[in-house]
Image 1 (cartoon, rainbow, N blue to C red):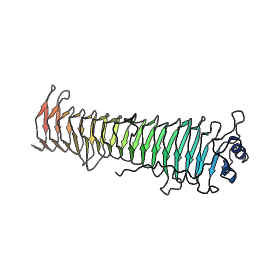
Image 2 (tube, rainbow, N blue to C red):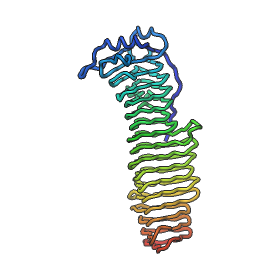
Image 3 (spheres, rainbow, N blue to C red):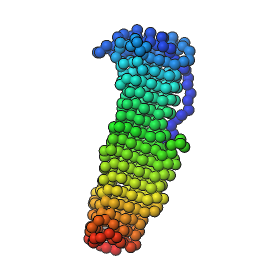
Length: 398
């Protein structure tokens, strides 16, 4: 998995800023924007280019709300380079959906604030950056690569906190910390802190949890339902915790380079390896290893612990290894070959095609336990430490 680097270099070609009266006057002159009409549009113009630096406040005063339902600001052909840099963007009084577009780059230098449950869209065809907080009761869409040419990076350097769904897209996506009703990231991404949603989190590409802020080394993905369709890689010091209230899917690898990995969900479906430097815990009723070839769960220098039933994919070979110990509490059941390379404790029955124990094995389940398999290979002592019988049923015992 190749690492990408989000470009944080900032070159602002032009600062286009509008004062309250100038923006409101041009915007409201566009029409009433009643239901069934086109959104009002404020296009870039030579008059706007002439304005000095400052903040843009769109939407009128609280006592005189605009009459239209949707609002669009477009900075386009009138700007030589199509680049826009804004100060504070306060859309608190806009009652309708809002779109802010730039023909090339869009930079939001200060806070972006909204207070109504509307849809807000930021679009650019180059680089889209926000240097400060994005907060409010709205649905947020940020797309830095609106023309789809693969060159627009999205760079959100401070926390995003919205009560609606948040969707992020760009050639490369960088976010700090995101709270939202749901989170969707469609392109390769890096996260400096956490992703937290009361609903679904969908990650459609490879992601890096780079935790470069030393004050927040540990990182969390917390969702009602997590779907990760790419690899997840934590490259910096600290732990990675993945929590899903409903079943979670990790279609790619999950790797923690220098810390521990904790996954909590009622059902975890994994299609590739899990690897951590520190302890690894999969706290799930069922761990479904949906692979057809070889894969493994490895805690290189710590303990590996799986709390629930393990269902390996048909025809797969799954290896479990750890620097200290392996604790598999539940049953292992599937048409697969299982290899446990280090000392382990097994709490359930083992019903598989092939079973290899390379270290000492302790069976500590309540009552009788059985190993039902094809070939069985043991290379160290095997003990049953709890009351009950331990029975082996295999085509070949070594």
